[in-house]
Length: 117
Length: 188
Image (tube, rainbow over all chains, first blue to last red; front, side, top):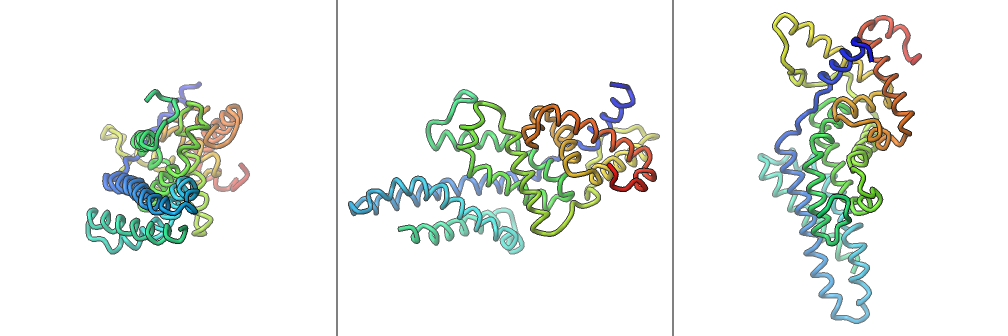
């Protein structure tokens, strides 16, 4: 590599230096992921226990493990995600936004899971 | 858990995902930022990337066979960015919004000239064809090697090497002779 090319690559490296994400992005994303995981597990547990009382539903927990967690959680994620901008506009702090996000996740999970029973 | 070993429980999966997310948050954010040109959309794109990655994480672990997952993650961001422009019918912003990020130390004499040169490079990057711009962002902002870039772009190692070489040469031409580059238009 010529020194001119090396110099230009050094400039390019400087121009395209990595960009640090805002601190609240990391916190918000982590909270959303944790909440999604926990809520999906709790809802699935409750659903399975109820279904197990009726032998006709014994096959459902198995389906729930696959459908409930993957597709259900995916749907919750997409729906909660779709309203992120609205929540962000209405929130007056990062904590408020986190609470609104958590509330939305709970609402969507409750809305989606009963339809599958 | 040993790296490359498949997780045995949901808790293992979550722990592995947390590790992936913490290790590569800056990579995904940097990539998103240089793709969309502003912090607001870069945050959106980063969030969407990790939420989508979470949904497909177990399958990705199985299929990766112990290889690094960064190219897979960047490929998700790449696809989402393409949808982002298609859905909103907009193009990448021509300039990067935060000139303050060009913050590497300079001598006093070279400060103005240096910043102008870096700005010209950033503007040039935004004008490159998509595949060349992507390759440069992956190489210089994220420090990915040819093999990783090839996996992220779905190309061979050889094709990626050529792509990078042409991207650098085209950009160099644009920066050293912007008038000629403009008059050539989209010949490249």
